[in-house]
Image (cartoon, rainbow, N blue to C red; front, side, top):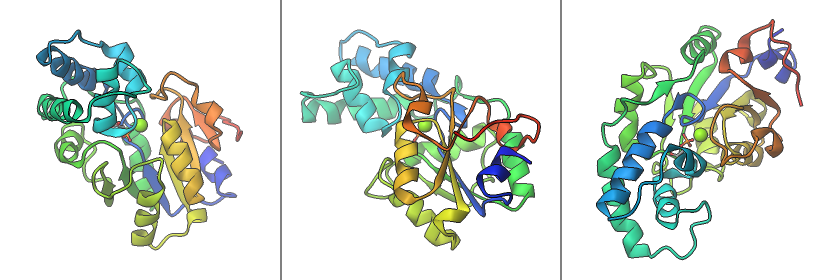
Length: 235
Ligand SMILES: O=C(O)COP(=O)(O)O
Ligand SMILES: [Mg+2]
């Protein structure tokens, strides 16, 4: 039995919803390059990859505010300055996917799920304008029947709205659905939607172990989800 079967009482979910950054792709090098370009254009010091890794997860607007504040807690950032900086970041990040890598085992796992007739969806806080080209460039287009970007709905994760929207489109109940992510936002959104959450340990959770957020299962590689030999245990 695979860990996925174990999560669903020996069956498979009808729908698997995926986070993108930190789950399917390691996008921090490109995000950091764009953040640093923005900071330098503003006459500030670059932040560097390691700090930007701590700040990714709540979409571009919050990432820019964190970069301006130099801190995860982005209090006191001037709203007009943040909007101007966001425009610089959006320009800098456009079409820059060259340093972004697909994590090991991702295409194989998506293929497996597709072969087993699990419907697939993508729910990311990344602005939607970046998605078509990024997904195509990384060979991840064509898998997802529904794609929700950070600006597709008024709410972003950790709000569960996107999960509810996709489940309604798919005609699937929460008990028949899975969410796979890397951060606290993903675990919280899944919990609020009543959906089982699998988390990847390698992603970006603001420097904290994702196990602390209490997902149903933590994996070190996505392929372990559908591998009957891993012996992964439910937590
Ligand atoms: O762009 C972000 O901040 C995070 O995107 P994600 O929801 O795919 O992790
Ligand atoms: Mg993520």
